[in-house]
Image (cartoon, rainbow, N blue to C red):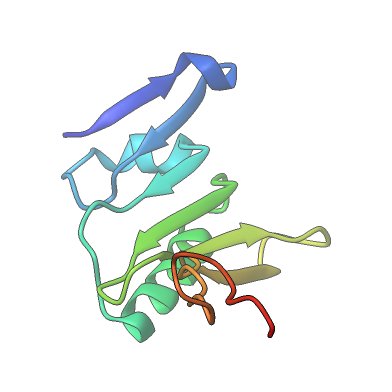
Amino acid sequence: MTVRAEPAADGLLCVDPDGGAAEAWRECADLLCARLPRPHRAAVLLARHLLLRYPGCLASLVPRYEGGCAVAVRLGGGPQRVAVLVLTLARPARRSVPAGGPRPVR
């Protein structure tokens, strides 16, 4: 069972839904953070499902096979209003000039 309280975040309770945590821990968790990566569609659907299933939870995070993660957050106006964001790492831009710098113009 993976249950950890994050002291740096003022007692935020983070629970891994994949880790076999008891149902009671999932019910009162502030953040549900899955450990196992999933394909894009499955990650998005699970992130949304976790918030709909556990209305006391503020956010859920599910890693993706493709990199990055799906993050679901609650919107105001009721427990059924949920937004899912897909976060990916930015790739470094390719350099269009040689590593030594631009060539002088003659």
